[in-house]
Image (cartoon, rainbow, N blue to C red):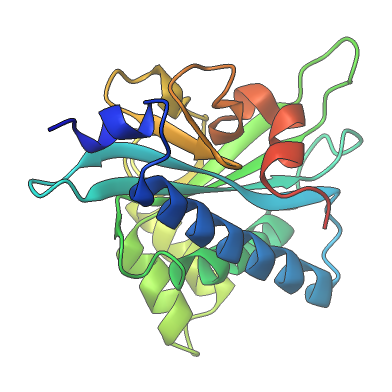
Amino acid sequence: MPSLLERLLGEDTPDEQVDLESRQEAADEALRAAVDRAGNPVEDCGVTAVAVVNEGPDGQPVVVPVARFSLGEDVETPDRDLAWDLVGEAAAAMREPFGDVFVRHYDVQFTFDGDELFEAEECRRVLLSTDLADRYGTDPSFSAGDLRAAVEAADDIDDEVAPVAWGEPVDYSRSDDAAVVVAGTAAATAASASAASCAGAGAAAGAGGGAC
């Protein structure tokens, strides 16, 4: 029997992909609504992809939901307080739709600076462990500032293992054992999976969530 990853990358659309797409859409709608209510100054936002990075012994997907915020080309140095408020919004939006899926971590990305013609946008990301996301979503006394302090205290030199406070992006599609679900497709190539990394910042906003 083909593995989950083989089914995701095949010509047919497996039930697992449809399920992940519906969760991505629910999280995307929740995030955009929350950012709109808060009036946060971002150009674009969305839950742009779900990276399937492994599978369990019974074929259950191990996933990384990816949220993206475009802060604007005129922003050279992001406001970290704003960024952590947005991290909290992303955690709250993604936690419930993916609550019964095995999540490795939540990836919250920020693009900023750059020039459309001559200079690529900068990108940084925050990785949240499921424990921290769950605590933020269930404990009213645990604020975005507390979340930031907890992530910064636990962060180490490894930008690929959560928690990460402000790290370099990773292209999940470059792994031989990963697939990326983006707006109704599953792909393993960097071009098709650009919404899962900051390498495709411009395309990702349109593919995964659009403007808030």
